[in-house]
Image 1: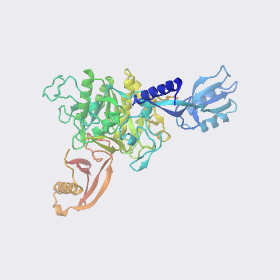
Image 2 (image 1 turned 180 degrees about the vertical axis):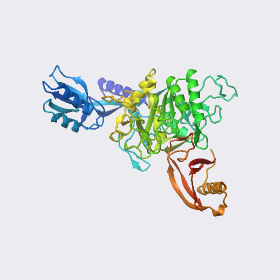
Image 3 (image 1 turned 135 degrees about the horizontal axis):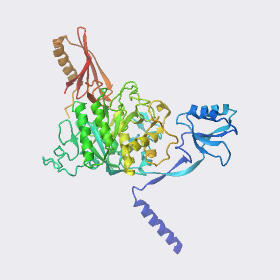
Image 4 (image 1 turned 90 degrees about the horizontal axis):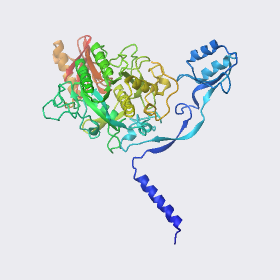
Length: 467
Length: 95
């Protein structure tokens, strides 16, 4: 059968188009998702805040009293439409119905008040998924309601990693120090993301860079005071994998960062504990390398104890002066850190982010410490799959696992905003959380880590967090 | 990493330590309880003063021993044994 020239032209264009699509294997996929025109992704039919029309002649003192009572903030005034018509935000977790009832009750001053209804539109939110075969078990990154360890999760209870990855998958220019039991730097899924000290020649028995440590090519071992930070346990390797197991490499799992540099620093002995002096020595190494030009921006610290130490606090503060964020596990005793401090997470320094653990249904885990004043946010910390020594993978639980999620997201932010300060970084992490009602009054931010909002892939929360 | 200890081996280590500590014959030590427990951290909630522990849930065993009126609680897993709150302090026993 003879075809027309138009037929052949159309067919040719289709072939070219198909070849183009198939030739971009890791292209960003566009996923249809409904988002609102105002505020955060919809979890209720209402957006944050309310629209209120004050009466002409409304008493300023009454308006202030209403706003103060609910910590409402006037964000916009629609005076050009009508005098006294405002858009006011309310803090996350406050019951909008309670607010509306109170406003409506003031008939002397309020003409009407209504929730900020969402006018939803279909938008395309870019997402990016890696090809790592066990990615589907990593509920903390993307939770589709999959069952982990016999318990089904709740869809969407995750850090929004696939959305964040459409913006950034990390950078090899960002170094995260994992001060822990060491790291299996030979693990197939980690090796490519392990920091290398380019000024040191490995295994030549010489301190080539003159930093006081021989052959510290991949990090530092404070226990034995040498340059071999191989994992003496499993823990440090697990934490490192959460931060930066290589992404889209067709192996095992994926880290919050597909690309990053992990600096392993061992201070935990084979007996499972670490001394104060070795912890300080580990921090000292990191600060020393930062001063020598290594771009270490985050220390991940999945450990702690009950003993206050001014020396450890001073060491962490010194790291802060060098522009290093210190992310600390809040502890696993199931207690209120405001009453029973856990160190280093409870030192209250500006460069410390204290992290509680949440599960795949957005509950604070039964073991996690909390603290309305002393614990900053929650992150996934139960049944977390990550790398373990000898090219293996394991599920582990603890605030130990939650902290590296936060360290990882901090690194993602830095990969995109290289000059962000420690203060700005901490603020971003706290203000970009997904609000979780159960976490209100339990952690400073009242929410769980959200990478998507932290890197600007989703709309930020409206309103501010006081901390 | 050290080779894995069995539950029986950790009980043996605990008995040996306890008998030496209180100067009693092993045969006079009574094993009251051995139970599976998930501890809150890598030191089984039995850190020494100024010792840091990894904040990971750790499966292990709680071993209760007694000699006359004196009791001791050992906490162990496949690689470590600790004595918990004995006369007000925690002790690292093995390794």
